[in-house]
Image (tube, rainbow, N blue to C red; front, side, top):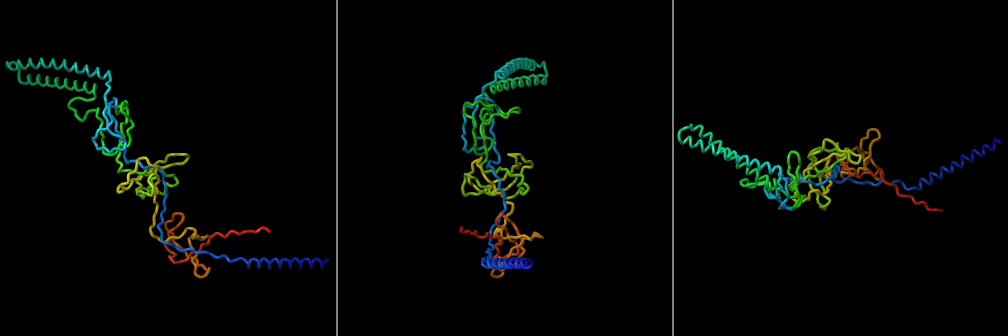
Length: 372
């Protein structure tokens, strides 16, 4: 019995020995791992975040009437350039019956008062000529007569304004002639001849006759997500691309970040504005969609490598790379990193341009298993 157990044990040991020999033989037949290397290169590294929005004028001026009525004629069209003081439209006044009657009554009252003051003045003048009254009494009568005469003229002018919107003597100040208040381009004319318009006053915004803007002063207006707003600040440069203008980038400067976010589609968005470079004379239509690349950091013409070549120490988290010192022999070199764009990273120290860096995480070639 003991002899049988001994034989079994020896057989197991012998089989295990043969298995080990076969394993090491197969392992010796496999090709050794050959690591590839890459070298650093001079690049411009830009770290940025992108915001979407539109190109809009810095200021849009709404031209509104200061009198209600019907548009008699429009003198401009969208796309035209106008100067301050140019005619925009002419309005024909449709008088209010109550206002017209009140103005008419005021004329009649002023006429009665004028006739009365005229009689008093003529009477006082006759007495003054005879030496009955003093010069002071005569002067008072003359002033009262002149004041009544002026009130009558004012009442007549007011009646004419209520009736027609204008009167003699006010020239270009006539309410019926609507003029441009600024120099710029007409962006929109939302009304047509024959439309009724409402005057602008303390209780009503009034009807917009035209929208004007200086198209040489354009800004990018967009929004950034709350996850990105903490990375940006006023004064950062922008690179704006407009979808309708191919192969063209516009420089701008970020000059406004909203202090309060607005919820849109479940995310908090913050409004930003950036003024476009005035030196660029390319005509950009207001309202065009655009993307702005906000440059958070930029390193020009610096030594850089792929981020995938960088390794990190498990204990200190210090970045390092492995430099080739001989045939498939590598040495660790600690490095100082700079600006990264997510693909390439600036190397401030630790690596030279001619150093060959180990690609430590290279993909293994796929193995083909042939079916027996």
